Length: 182
Image 1 (cartoon, rainbow, N blue to C red):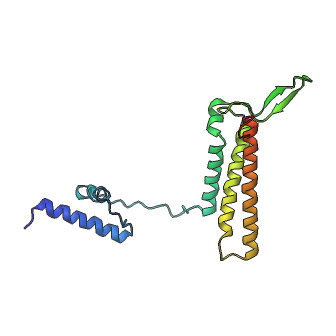
Image 2 (image 1 turned 120 degrees about the vertical axis):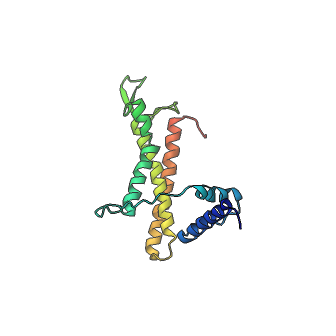
Image 3 (image 1 turned 90 degrees about the vertical axis):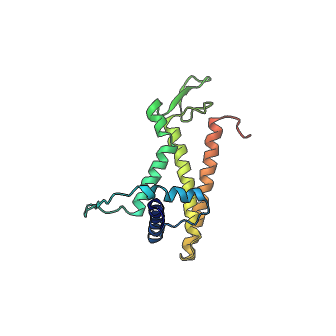
């Protein structure tokens, strides 16, 4: 008869493997460290029996709501919202024309890669989001279950969005850094 430690460890490993099979989370990995990390903690730890229930009036948001929130968060991050909150730059700048002496507005802060106006960040972030939406439209265009006319319109809109986003991003970059990539 095997010692108790061998039986309990083997029983725990078998229980963990059976639980993984039951939940459909069986990973086919040949890495022994992965298996050790997956089985070893459950040989001496037992997960608590919790009976948590979600409130019945709480419903999951729709996929489009989740997508919209993620897209808005992406826009805020790539627009430099954190930078704008910390540094508090002006919305737009101004420069005096040396010939006439008039003051004209400037949207891009030229020559400074690590600084931006608020409108500059928002417009650049919008171009990145437009390019991402173009890629999503191209992905929708390859779905064979959609009508051909809809696939063509998705494809054309996706290509147009990507081309516009790329052209505007390069224009913004050339305004930001004069003489770059020429």
